Amino acid sequence: MNKYLLIPLVLFIGLVGFLLVGLHRDPHEVPSPLIDKAAPDFQLRQLKEPTKTFAAKDMRGKVWLINFWGTWCVACREEHPVLVKYSKTGDVPIYGVDYKDERAAAMQMLEEEGNPYTLTISDPEGRTSIDYGVYGAPESFLIDKNGVIRFKQIGPITDEVWTNKILPLAKQLNQ
Image (cartoon, rainbow, N blue to C red; front, top):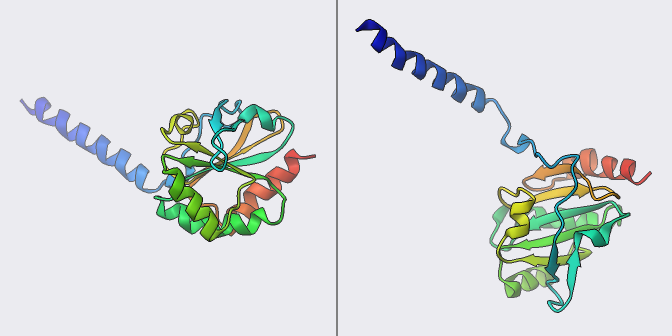
């Protein structure tokens, strides 16, 4: 009878151990299985001119950042001024994916708050976002000249992330 009481106790202790380990991990450090793999291909309609499309293969030969965002996303709105600031430098072209959003709302936000994107495309159903493994907005991916994902940022891009991670890696990839 005592050995049957021991099994739930061992399971409980194991569960507590997993939870304690999880408490000490940074949720922004979720490893992406796409790092160092080819970026998923897509062809989506442009936000500004929906009769035109844009495909990932159009960027072959260039280092670029793709940023998944939405007007409904509070963190995206916090990130937006940072992207506007760094887009003006021209160091890394930033392409936006308006993720599960209304076209009119996205157009209005970009007009009122500035447009950091070289081009914005629309992913209204979120299919491309799923292909990229986007957990939630904002998320960004730095893609090299061969179309390979080299960096993933979960959550807003900050001055620190841009200066210490994205920009140095983009410069290295452009050499």
